[in-house]
Image (cartoon, rainbow, N blue to C red; front, side, top):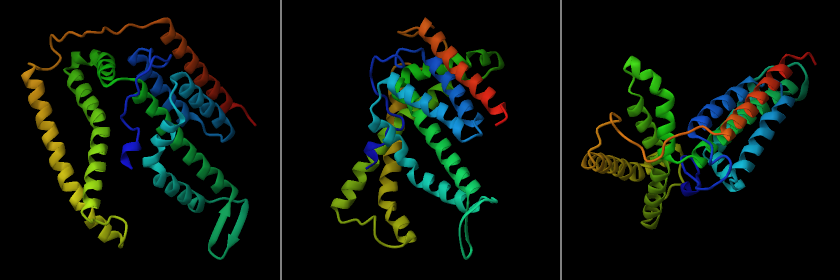
Length: 268
């Protein structure tokens, strides 16, 4: 069910990753994404894989959260694998039957693209699992604060992003409850062709949209009743400070980035 999806969820803890400054985690996640896209050789993917395993171990996140972060992407991963497997051209033929042609280059490309998506989804989920929405808002706002001189709404944008991220698990749980209620009333979401299945989703989407708008209205009223008028003059209970662990984590990830850049340029 959708309740098992970890996207947007926060897992409280006191691990080394949890204690990092949220600004550090956001910047390191950007570096991690650069690392994943920088790798162009299949065997060098071992370094990002080991890095991802190390992040999950240091964050003390159970393996079930890793699997649940991939659950919404399972059909997309299968689709991308199949498309790249048969659409990529190559010279080393492994299997051929009539119009079906499988090459070694296509197989490597399919594995390459699928593994990259897995690393991106699983890696970015660590950020939300180890960072509370409030800390994430403060970190994003601090990072974008220099843009205020250009009249960029840093606080408002950070608040909107965090609220949207925060309501992902809430809407997923609401979807799960509505689906179970409709199934208890005899609704069938599995049988029929594609159009019939799409039509059967209407009893879920309508109350879901009504609930989402109601939650948004309640949130707006709650913020107004607490005299919220943006970030101007707003104080924080917890001030953000960099520590030695933040510097160590940044140096470690930058070393991995430099190592991968060097390995990619080596002639093999």
